[in-house]
Amino acid sequence: MMSIPGLVVDERRHSHVLQGPLAAPRGGIMLHYDDSSRDDWAVEWFSDPRCTNGYTWLVLDDGRVVELADPAHRTPHAGACKTPMANSVFYGIAAATNGLVPATDRQLASIAAICVALMRHHRWTLPSVPHGIAGHDEQAIWTPAYTSQRALWGTTGRKVDPTGQRPDHKKIIDLNDVRRSIAALV
Ligand SMILES: [Zn+2]
Image 1 (spheres, rainbow, N blue to C red):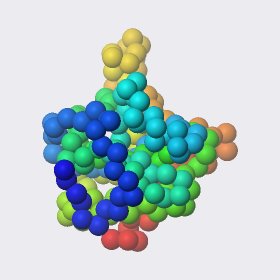
Image 2: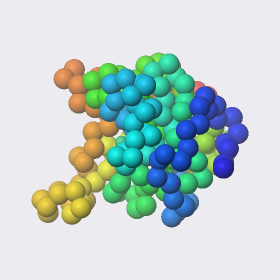
Image 3: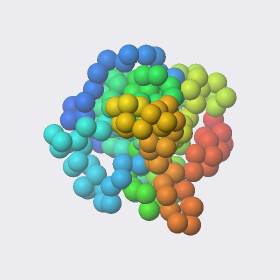
Image 4: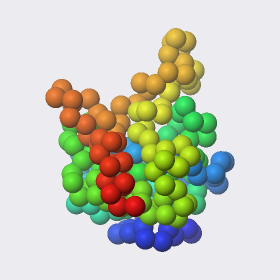
C-alpha cells in the first residue's frame, strides 16, 4: 500500500472501492463532491456493493479524511473526460456534500492540504502539474456510452460537481479558491 508523506489520513477503509492498476502515470488531481447529505451515510455508501464510484479520499464536513482506496491504484471516479484515462491520471478527492451545501472551511483546508502533499510527493508546482487541479465538471465529457445525442459527444456538461448548481451561483467548491489556498501553502 502506498503512503504519501505528509498526507494526513484519519481513517482507512480500503478494498470496498473498485481498484485497478494505473493505466497511465499520475498527472493531476480532480475534485468532486459525492452528492451525500450526511457524512455517516456517505462513508457507508462506499462499502455498499451497489456503489460503483470510487474516490481515493473522502473529506468530511469537519475536515477529517477517509482514505477509500490505495493511492497507488486507479479508481472509477472520473469516467470519460477530456484527458484520456482520467481515472488513472487524476487522483480523486471528494468533499462529502451535495449540490446545495457549500463545502465547509475545514473541508476546503483538508482538500488543499491533500493537494499540497501530493504535489510535494510528485515534485509538482502549481503551474507544473501536468494535467492540473481540475473540477470534475471541467473534465467530464459526453460519449456514446452516456448519450445517443451525437451533438453532445466530446463536450462537457456531463457532470456539475464540484461547482454545483445553486440558484445564487455560490460554488460548492470554488477551484480558484482551492488553487489560491494551495499557492499559499507551497
Ligand atoms: Zn465527480
